[in-house]
Every structure is written in structure tokens, then in C-alpha cells.
Image (tube, rainbow, N blue to C red; front, side, top):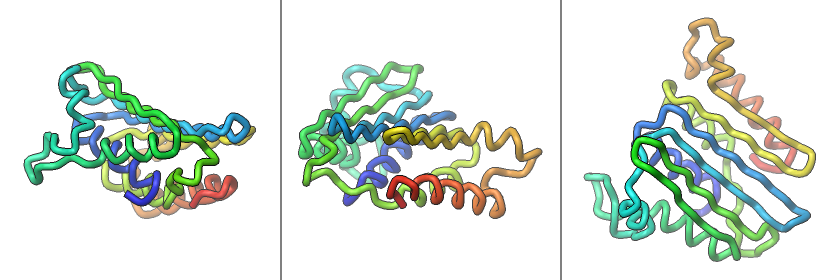
Length: 181
């Protein structure tokens, strides 16, 4: 995977496959401490301790369409290549949490990619899942909460073109303020 937005997309798609109804994505860019942190937490069906250990094996997957599962191993590798860390915590029936850190200034840290497109893809493709996205950098904090948005739509689906256009414009404007597309 070429960028962080695709890693996030992959992990969240795993959450949705695990029947998550709420997914939280928290990003913290701490330039002063030279640290980037990405945390993805879901309320899906979770995994046993044994399954968690297997998730970083590229030859393990729960999918029936292919024999390898490269998403989490590649995300872990991306973190380690930029002097970061990677951890997965999960319990059956209590969801899963993936946490990756990166040395912010590291030349091997993957670029952001198209975070706006990632968020819109998730929202449009999974209208029954609530997404909470929080991005902090310095004094800037941007929060996108589809549960909150949905409460103001008066029955209009969140993946209605007008709603999607408004969400996309909001995300693009706010993430653009910190240099992410």
C-alpha cells in the first residue's frame, strides 16, 4: 500500500467485515514530539488472543476469496519502517483496536494519500455504520461524526448525493487546512 489513507481504509474494511456498527479513527500529528499516531477502534465481533497473533501473518486471512491477508502486516511494516510501533488489542464480542505510531519526520513514513476519498468511500459504501474521525495537529482539531450528521438529516440517507457532497466539501476544506487532501 502506497499511503496511510489506504492502510486506514483496509483496517476499517476489516472492522466492517467484523460487523462493526461504529468505527472510530483518531489521528494525532505531534510535530513537536516528532510523532504521528493513528488509532482505529471498532465495536465489531472482535478476535481471540490466538487470532490476534495470527493477524500479522501475511498467510492468514479469514476471507474465502483469497489465501493471504496483507493489510495488517503491511500497516505494521509501514509503522516499523518509520521507527514506529504497531499493536492490536481485541476481545471476542468487544471489538478491536489497532494502534500505529510513526516517527513524524522519518523519510520512510508513508504520505497521507487521499484521506477525503477514503472517508467518503467508507460513508457512501456503508451507510448503516457510524464513523467518528478525529484529526489533531497542533491547535487544530477536526471531527467528523456521522452519527451527529445523521441526527440532523430528518430521514434523508447519509449517502444521498447532496449529503455526500456537503460532507466531502467539509472534509476537504478542513483537512486541506493542515495539508491533507
